[in-house]
Structures are given as structure tokens and as C-alpha cells.
Length: 490
Image 1 (cartoon, rainbow, N blue to C red):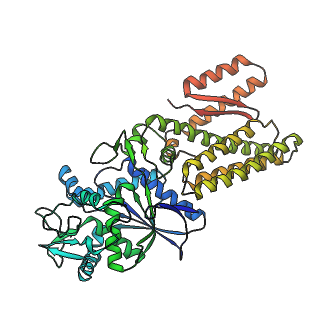
Image 2: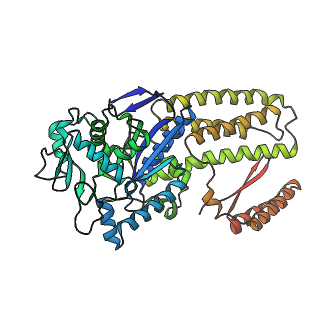
């Protein structure tokens, strides 16, 4: 199993010294409702966690909330509320949206405001080790004290100086030095420290929280590629300077950016919220998750409503295939046809089961190659095609071989989509479907139509089909095993 490591710039075989895998992901700064860029980040890391577990690597997964930050202070001012209230509001929005996208909750969620004593201890330790200095209540990390600074991003000195201008301060010993602790400004939250009242710098927060949970080293550190410099570069410098252990992260896993046209999706610019897509555009949450996994995680993704709609069609094809197999198995059980032998169906059943083994092997090869979900989704397409082809070729009698092949196909479809966290039932849509009384009425009309067709009363059968269409928006499909129906989307 290979994982691309940003620090080395190559794919590396994944190994761990001990289990569980220690996985830390830079989480949300809760300053607004989560957008699709956040959705992609957390869906990707959830996918990686699920696949590692599937391949036999139990994972301890930690994710932080930066619940105190300049941007959260600005959000509180924007909305006329305390920064802590703004952070809590948008943290709740995170959980709401990620639950809908099938993102499993972390084993540990950390909040910066819960780790202030540990942050102060780490900053003090860096000062004592000669890696940081105090300036009028501010504390800065001394970048020249860490000779390998820049090895993650691969930036040269000029590029790092350009990046360092996001924290301008003429007092700094070196322009690249970055803040570990910020002296309090009027109206801002603050905590007491050895250097006076203040609050943490951004970068020290993740180092402290990760090391508090996992110790001096993590196995996988996830985050967006926009965090490579300066955030993750600075995490490496301060963590390794404090602990003396290198590397701080054995594998750096960075996903590409999701953008609108040429602009990165961000709260500071243009963005599309997850809620607006799921609720406003009525996109099924599992289909949106499929879309966010549709390209390799390291590739940048330009948001396309047209491509999203095409993914909805793709996902529904999978869901319909699953529903078809379940219907056939239920039908066979009710008629007890499974015991009947159909010699002509044996070869087709064997051909399907043989294909399943090949498809699974290809799926695993794609995912073992640095979580190539794009290729893995193509294997699910292939699986769906063969299941549909087999199901549509069945007659009115299902043999033991046919039933076993259908069960194997269903199990495989559930297994592969489950590995990716893609549900094949839209549970949210079910709440808007027909109620029990309406379903009973539809089923009664279908029974009447079946009787009319058996009596060759085609006019009555057509009348009932039209009635179901116009009154209930129901589409009827006739199969060798009887009619099926579904409510069309408007």
C-alpha cells in the first residue's frame, strides 16, 4: 500500500511501528458555515481512515477546532456576538454537515481553548531550548535555529520571505520568524501567561494538540495543500525543535484545493456552502460525497454543477442496481423459486461471480495506489454494469446459482461503496416520499394493473399506468419478475 508523502515528494510504502495508526487532521476554524472545500478535505481524510481500517490498520483519528483566531474574532464582530458564540455556532454547523456527508466523527476532537496551559508550556520550552524569544509580550519562533526549515514546502529563501510577510513585524530577528504567542489587543480574548496577557499563535496550537494526544510523532498528518506553507512547515519546525524527534509526521497527506473558476474556495472570497447544495439544490448527500471523491485527492478540483449533476446520475445508477437485486432476492424468496434449477443460467451466474473477484482486485489495486478513488469509482461502475446486465437477463424462475450470484453481487456492491463511505440509500429523501397510506394505494393500483394485463385488458392497464403517472408521479417498469415502481424527481 503506497501513500504519497509531501515531505519526500514520492509515494512510499505505508508501514507503522505500532498500532493504532496515529492520524491527525487540521480541522476547521469555525467562522462561517462549512463550504464545499471543507467538505472535500474531511471526506478525503474520512475515506483514508476508512480504507486504512479496511486494510487492517486500526486508526486513532484526532481533529482540531481552532476556536480562537483572528478570523473568529472578526466573525463575532460581524455578527455582533462574542467570538466564543460564533465558534460554537459554526462548530455545530460542521457536525451537522459532516454527518450528512457520512464523515465519521473523530476519536478525539480538540479545541484550542482547552489546551492553553499545554500551549504555554510548549512555548516556554522552546524559549528555554533557544528556539524562541520574547518581544514586549509577543513570542516568536527563531527560524534560523532550525536548519532544515523549508524541507516540507521545498521553498527557497526568497519564496519563504514572501510568505513570511503575512506576519510583518520590524522587531523580529528574522523576517521568517513566526508568532507563537500574541500579546492581547484591546477587546480581544486573552489568557494569562509568563509574558503577559495574550493568546496563542495559530501554528503552535496544532503542534501542542497533536503532541498532547499522540506524543512526539504522528503517523499521518492530513490537511489541505494550502496549509503546506507556512502552517505545516512551522508545525514541523516548532515540534521537532521542542521534542528533538524527527520526523514529526511520518506521512504528510495533503489534498488539492476545490475552487470556483480559478479562485480557491474560501470564506474570505467566493464559496458555496454544503448546506446550499444539499438543501437548496436537493443533491443527495451520498451523491455529493461521491462527487468530492471523483478525482484523485491530490488533484485540484474546479466545482462544476454540471459534473455534480452527472455524478447524481451515476450514484442513482448504483442505488438502482442495488434496489433491483434486493427486489429480485425478495421476489425469489416469496415464490420459493430458489430451489428450482435453471441449467441455462448456470454459466451466466458463474461468469458474474468470476467478474466480481477481478473487480475487487482492481478496486484494491487502485486504492492501494495512494487512495486513487477516481479509479476505484470506475470499478464500482463496472460492477454495477455487470450486475444490471445479469439481473436484466434473468427470467421468471431463479435458480440456486442465480440467487447466489445476486447475493454475491449485492455483497460486493455494499462492500466497495461502504469502504468509501458512500451510502446507496438517500435517507433524507425518504422522509419526503409517499406516506404508508399512499404507498398502499399505489401497490393496490399495481395489483389491479397486473390483473388487467393477465386478462389482456390492455386499455385498463394503460389507464392505471397513466393514473399513477399523473396522480402520484409514479413511474412503472415491467420486468419478468413483475412490475416495479418509483417516484420520479420533479
